[in-house]
Amino acid sequence: MAINGVLRPGHAQLRALNLEEDVKFYRDVLGLVEMGRDSYGRVYFKAWDERDHHSLVLRQADRAGIDLFAFKVDSLATLDKLEKDLNAYGVATNRIPAGEMLNTGERVSFEIPNGHMIELFAEKKDVGNGLGYSNPAPWNKQAETGIAPTRMDHALLGGIDLDGARDIFVNVLGFYLTEDVIAEDGKTQIAVWLSCSNKTHDIAFVRAPENGKLHHVSYWIETWEKVLRAADIMSMNDVPVDIGPTRHGITRGATIYAFDRSGNRFETFAGGYISYPDMHPLTWPIQHLPEGLDYAQRKLHESFLTVFS
Image 1 (cartoon, helix red, strand yellow):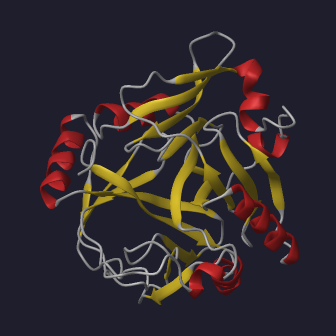
Image 2 (cartoon, rainbow, N blue to C red):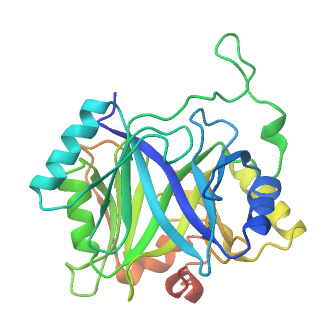
């Protein structure tokens, strides 16, 4: 059962400038499993250890970026309740019928104040991880394909109205604040990390000059050694790396940031601490953002602060 009904991130839908090039990238380099295509031309992927049908959807477009980010909730009753709660909070919602997205039930869609489309759903086909549900092996051949993350972990989204986005997630959806970056005035939040689970974060928001921007979608891998292996694979496949391998002060995660073939940033992420809703949030004054971002070099990377898709 979820802490507050929202279980975890469910899927991200990204825009690709050359769909087939990005299909090859996510399948062969990142190592996701291609799960199918639909009549709209969308391509579906999952990480090898995920059991739901997909966690990433790609579509052809003339500009990169993110269409939507979705969360799975624990039941249809919770889906109905959260829609009512959103409406009572003044957030307009739209019901998307079951089957519009492959092997996915009815979805509740809404726009948050920083211009991002968020979806909630309760049902998606359980396809397993190829190991079965009785006497399973610890991994399979797919776990050796490319970087091979075990799951899609979180997203960092950029927009003007961070406060409005944060308030919906905290006051309506039941997320809690784990960490934030505070401006020189000592009170304005520049970035926030929010969790619906016991992870360091399931979604994060940063103030940006434009709404609806993607900073990155993150994929979780198991160890620091596998982060280093991911760096080798990126170099062997001419993947543009933004930062890393290094360690964050914020969340304590080991990380590499890089770009897919369309310029959408992604992260390979390991570690982080266990978090609970009763824990006091961790605050990073803006002057300590360099070590929050890159603890090893204590360095601000300009591209990390300015490049969105």
